[in-house]
Image 1 (cartoon, rainbow, N blue to C red):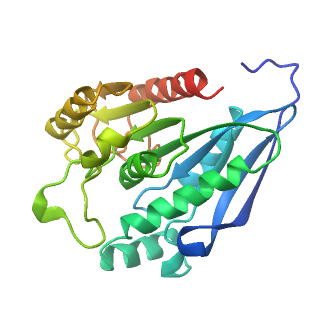
Image 2 (cartoon, one colour; image 1 turned 60 degrees about the vertical axis):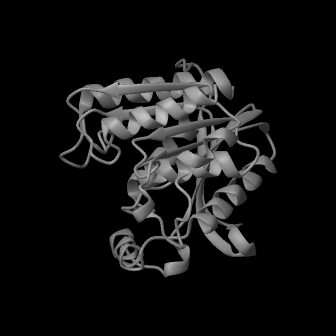
Length: 251
């Protein structure tokens, strides 16, 4: 809880970290200043790329008291504008799930090794990042909370699988070790309400600790204030739920 007499500061910078297969990739790290220890967050960026919005929310999480890292999951496709690199990724058929999980696990290990952290680490992602966050939470031991915002292709048909995406994330649900918060728009198509129903049923089947919220009059990406899909009331409520959830399980 912020009060006006508090000292507040954030140190934010681009750093290098070890990702999948020992590769050195870049990441954006924002560290609250002041008295710790702090909980930590790993952010899995969306298909539009490692962009300004993800740097902004990395800083946003830090302002709320979380040491936060956002690794560049598209690092191996070269450098340029986020839009140009995202176009290369789409043309290349995406990035391999195993590689992404390795990069997010590396980010987890990076923040866990820092001073002034409390050892609790959450993971957050939107769009394809929600899917990747779900995969990482299920497959990389150590995450204590998961926030999936409209993660597409958690539920996949057999014809959607590929060498890069060989297993539908929903099929790892039995291995999910931590609580999950899911935020979805009822007007979305990826994931559709029917896919969210299937995901919820799988979480119930394995008796997982989950909290799903579905918003009317909202579609995909309703947090994105810089796009027509933004929905102000739903986004404000969604962010409140995100920070209440993380306070419960990480702080």
